[in-house]
Length: 92
Image (cartoon, rainbow, N blue to C red; front, side, top):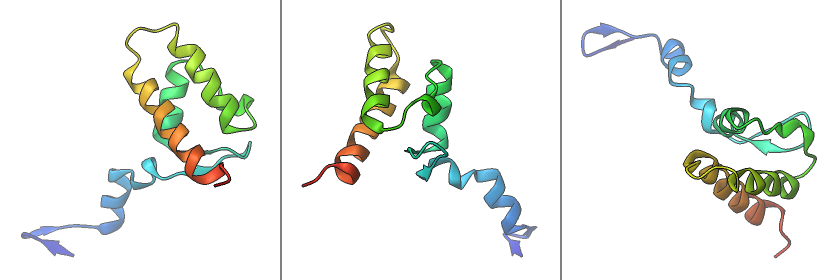
């Protein structure tokens, strides 16, 4: 396909954009997480595979936040997971 005079392969563009990077996906341990969230958790050595539910993972994240003063990316993951947990796993 040509766009603005350049030959473009849609499959290559999709792969370069990492679109699936920010989609929630169910993991082997049953948790639903984004790849971007897993990257942040790995940076702070929080092994999401060790947790069987979001509540315990969120608790571990909050414990870790007490150790770091400026872990804004981890704080954002905590907020995202808390919202996800509320809207998807809480009986309303």
